[in-house]
Amino acid sequence: MAKQANKSVFPIVDEVGTSSIFLTGTGIMNAQIRVVFPNAYTVYTVVPFNGRFEIYIPPLARPLEEGKIIHIYQTENSKDESESVEVKVFLS
Picture 1 (tube, rainbow, N blue to C red):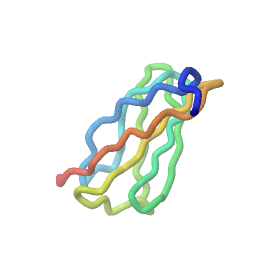
Picture 2 (cartoon, rainbow, N blue to C red):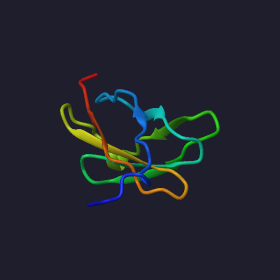
Picture 3 (spheres, rainbow, N blue to C red):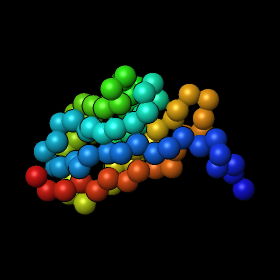
Picture 4 (cartoon, rainbow, N blue to C red):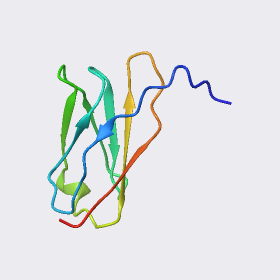
């Protein structure tokens, strides 16, 4: 059984629509955010000092289709990666 005490907390992610160009949310300052789009394209960013991250959704990850799931993870310094946050793409 995996040790839970060293696991990062999961980020809070805002809604994502089919016409979204950015994925936004809140995380722990200096933590790494990993986003895996439905087509498996993956991008990374680091949470800035204010705790709000913003990731440009690159053309290779689009178009986003309604109902598809985006997986977002957070890794805090010296901790294991968080559980996945699943965000379902809505029609926009």
